[in-house]
Length: 166
Image (cartoon, rainbow, N blue to C red; front, side, top):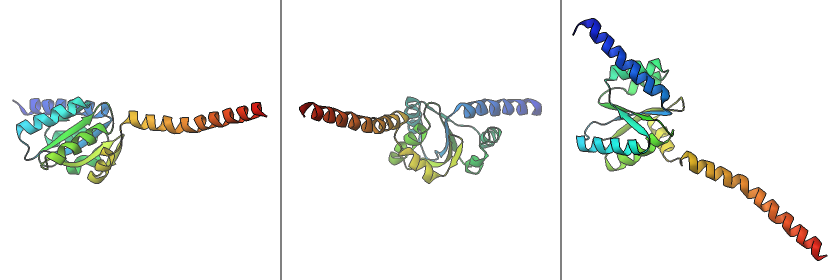
């Protein structure tokens, strides 16, 4: 393969990864050194189940794609055998799956990530993994908004019953 062909192939890989990074709601870099093929496949299945994807690319290609998307903050963590995990449906899903998997498999190390366009350190990614899902947060908000209305309705009902009795 000629030098020009090699450059074109690598540029195409960068473009493909950039397109995936742009569509992802979150991007998490994790080192998978020491995981067996079986464990890696188990991780991929768990990620797919939650609407995420594990992409293994050469670090140089991943750095170029991240820089092209404005995610240059993760460049320093792209050293060694890394996987780039893309959360395609929900922002916190990748962090949740990775931390659950890392509890049973200490060889998996979460390095950093980009969630909704902001850079997060490993400790912050761990905190994000403890957040409830978007649906649960919306349900919690709805119940908090509903509670005062319910109390008002009960109070008005009691006042109207009291006026009827007098």
